Every structure is written in C-alpha cells, then in structure tokens.
Image (cartoon, one colour):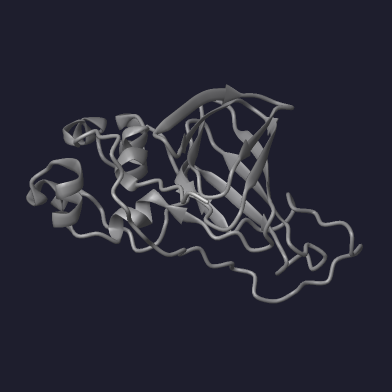
Length: 223
C-alpha cells in the first residue's frame, strides 16, 4: 500500500485568509503574508479533545438517546457540539454520533480524524465545506438540508455556516466509538515560530502575533 500524507502547509493553503483569520482571531490580511504552497511537510500531533462525560448515564431506553437534549461538550461563540459515544450511550460499540450546531457565520475549524471516517447529514441550514485530500486535491462545495457528505479517515476538512442570520445543524456519524480529533488551531500551537516560519516563508518574529493554543478551539465564530 502507498501511504498518503496531508501536511499542514498544503492544508492551510486550501483555506481562505478570512477562515484562517476567524480561527485565530486575527485579521484576514495577517495570513496574506503566509507562503502558499502545495508541497506538504510531514508533521505529527496529538488529540486534545477530552470527553466531559466520564461515567455511563442511565437512559430510559437502551436503544434510544436524546442527543439534542444532552448538555453540549463544546460550547463557543461559533456554536456547540453534543457528543454521543460509548461513554454516554453504551450501545454504541464501534460507532459515534455528534450533533454539530453552527451559529450564523460559525466555523468548525479545519481538522481531521486519524482513526475514523465521517458521514455528515445536514439537518437544517446551509453550509460550505472544503475537503483537502492527498495529491493536493481541494474540493469546496455547499450543502443543504437532506444532503450527506462522506469524508475518508484522516482527510483535512472544515465546515462553515454561510448564513448570516440562521443556525445550521449537522448530524455527524463516525465508524469509531471514540473518534480522535486533531484541529489546526492546536496543531499550529505545537510548533515553534522558527518551524512555522520555514514552512510559510515568514520571519519568525512575524508569528509572535499568532496565538499558540494548547487545545483545539473546535468551533469558532466567523468574521
């Protein structure tokens, strides 16, 4: 088998400056200085997402779970994420389901799941998705209610609510009961300014303004 690699440099160049700016809380012009390249640099990171639910909770029906009524694990100005997995829905062996709600202009930051493929179903609203796959392929498209999207394991992708006045909701399914998430905000924080400068063709001091997050932001508010 031929190993497939997706690097942070090529992935970043597939995003618009405005999306990068919204992710890191900076103006889009800041990222206009970044060197855009299609040549990937091999990197590694680790998942920083910890489930807030540590104990199994009894539910009225072993086969039914009110995901929408469960307290969101992720809450931010950009939206919320409720997690249904083996921790709180014991019957989910080898599967997981998330309810993603993006507020107007909210963004599910660029991320990938190294251990799970993803199937998205649009419940309401309209979103724009970009999937970055091996071979420097960038696929950007809009989705609406009733449509589904499949994302192979470890493919970079992000979701953006294109509506300025309405929420959008995704049901997100995984073929792993505990999908491991790695986001670009935490990944950037794992590298020194010298390393990032060499990747993006910048002087390290320019990157002093770039926040170094120790955990992924997961969902951010758009500009």
